[in-house]
Image (cartoon, rainbow, N blue to C red; front, side):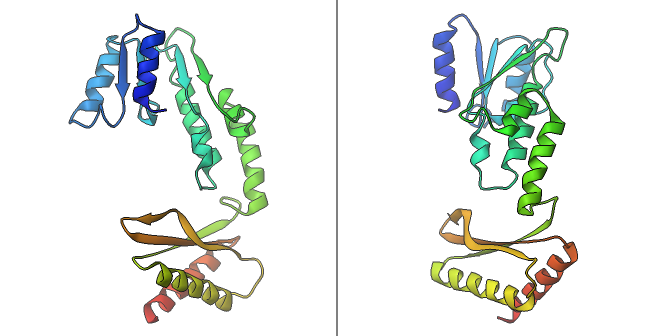
Length: 226
């Protein structure tokens, strides 16, 4: 469901309300953002519908209700920080309401109501989120529990890229033989092909930052020679 569809539904549910929509379509022209936000600030609309761009940094005293739809979409990103990003976004969204003398309320629609990032964001509990998130980071050696290096390879020929990334992994295993280095991949990036260019990635995780820097330096020499 996009913002246009939500605008249509809101118009049917609240026929008396004045609506404003803020997304890429309505802000594509120069000064589009300022025009919409200025109109909302001056009370020319009752409901502002938008994408993530309406969440950050805006301060309107008369906003008393914030609705967040599909709050868990960012949880499905192929990124170890997806829970953190979701928590940040929801905290920012919830914080848009009740900034003046009137109290605020937020309604979060989600398919994962039990997820710790959504639970913690709903009550603005930073400590609870931190403790839960850090337990996962420590268990899986993700930053800040460990350091991480991403090696991204790209090229127009898929077979050559697959072969090259395979050789890079073999080289890493040859120059670092200890068992405390975690290697993930090679695998296709979350977006595996952009404008006919294929993309693969290898992730390396280690407790020592200097070890990853050393591997990076050696990899750069290997790539240059080969």
